[in-house]
Length: 154
Image 1 (spheres, rainbow, N blue to C red):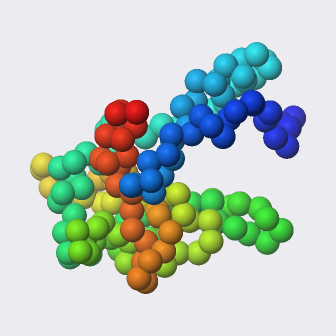
Image 2 (cartoon, rainbow, N blue to C red):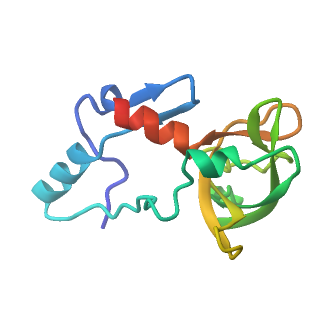
Image 3 (spheres, helix red, strand yellow):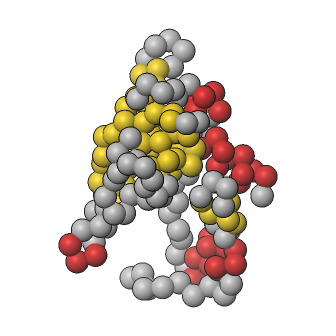
C-alpha cells in the first residue's frame, strides 16, 4: 500500500521553475531511484513526440477558435480527484494561445489536446500544452513547444 507521503530530502529544491512559462518541471531520476530502493516503481506517462505539438503545430493556431480536449483531475466531493474531460475552444488571442472559457477547480496544469488536420487532411490530436490559471474569461496555455525548449535547455 502506498504511503501518504514520500520523504525525499530536498525534493522541493529539485524542481526547475520556468516562471516565464508558468510551469515547473521535476526530473524524475530521484523518484525512480527512491522507488527502486523501496522495491516498487513509479508509473509515468510522457507525452510522446508523435502527439506533442511542435512549433509548426502551435503556429497554426490562429484567431479562429478550434476544438480542444482537456483531460483533468477535477475536484469532487470529499476531495476525490475524478478524471474529467472538457471539450472547449482554443484560439490565439493577442499572441497568446488560450482556452476560450474558464474551467472548474482542478484543471490548472491539465494537458490540452488540439484537433488539427495532418498534411493529408486527416484529423488528429496533438498535445498543445498545459492549462494555466484563468485570466480574462479563459485560460492561457503553456504551449508544449515552449515547455520542451525550456526543459531541453535546463
